[in-house]
Length: 343
Image (tube, rainbow, N blue to C red; front, side):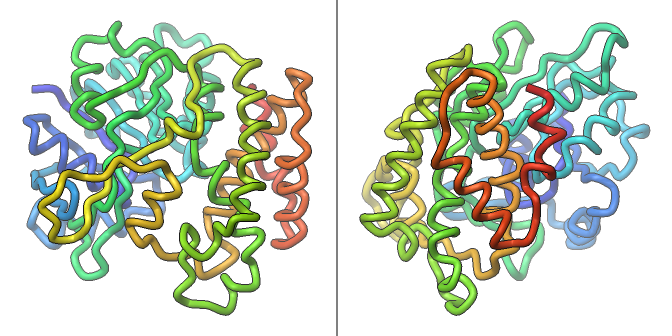
């Protein structure tokens, strides 16, 4: 039985843990130091982990706050926010010799922090970056061990060569039935839909975010004019993709499956923005939200750096970074510099 260590006990990590456990994998759930409260809550509930909605599975997991106690790890799955990637590199470095692969959901160059940390220590595990997570999911407000899955993402883009590690491609196919292989860390980063679709509507809806507690970005934030701007921003992204190695995904390939509650009809196959509308995802209701902070520092700043390295102009991306930095009073180019410097 393959042993999967999942670092990140949020919605994605909990859902992946339940999904893999239900399919016969041995799963250990962990977190970065200082963020173990959810592990404690899940463990205290004593019910394992389970999901409902588009994916209905349940499973049992072990818990690890200190990786020194975890033995015989086959694959590691990382589902934390991007801010945790440097810490995760330090966590994984001592056990890298026994790990066969590390998969990042989603890819924001997190694997390059681990590659830098390992240096010339010897053979490294296969480092795989995914362009997105396998589901649109949220944690239950009342039950910490339960996640609601509103969107399934059957086609996810992966870097590296998962077929080179026995059992890895099979595991990824369980999570995403139609995986796409052949990306690099750079092309997976540029195929992450979050920096494309999140920052622009949030920036242009700043006043509504602060005033409307029922703000729904995919519904209220994407007006015809905003969508037109997103299309021009996507043209910059596609020009960047054309100048890096590896398979990338076009706008129309960023898709998911959604079902209406209680419907007996087959799920609808929708593009990313339509998925968000159909799922009724809320928020953000504060400007200090990862749709602006993380997707700018770990996404747009790295896109801009790729443009500088390849000679591809990114006026829209660069303007967004400048405006979001001014809006929040933070220098996101400086915040994202360590990650961009890995390119």
